[in-house]
Image 1 (cartoon, rainbow, N blue to C red):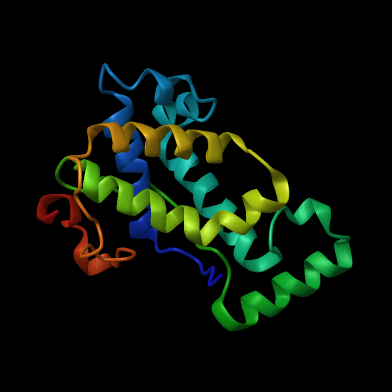
Image 2: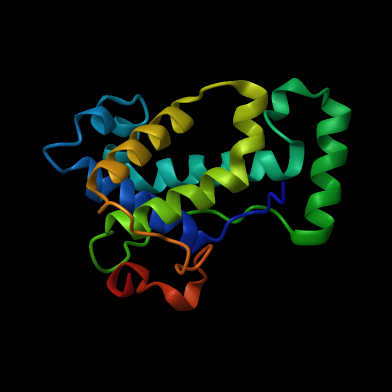
Length: 165
């Protein structure tokens, strides 16, 4: 597995997918997930949680509370020496409405980069929410549509992702 810290734009895209799809009348399972009220109430705080969960997977291999204090500090110091601290996050909406294909790609990318956390912890409010989003996106997707040609991750120069795909 090649977990790495996803970009701020990846988090913006994931928050945008959650907000856009969660507001659709058919998305009852998305709105039933425990993470939905947090996302709806404060997208910036929810995005910061998403980014922190990915960060913790990359730095600690999962929940840092499962490690002793010295090991946690050592791993964080090593990571920050190479990459710096996790920057603060504030949601910056992306233009366009996420298609099923584009949204599923965003969800898959984040889930792949963060999956070790869930493997160690079992279901979390975020993983349950993403599973509901994925199921909803799959129900919206046209049969046989492949996301293989879509970018794997979003950099800051491609914030028009939902307008293009």
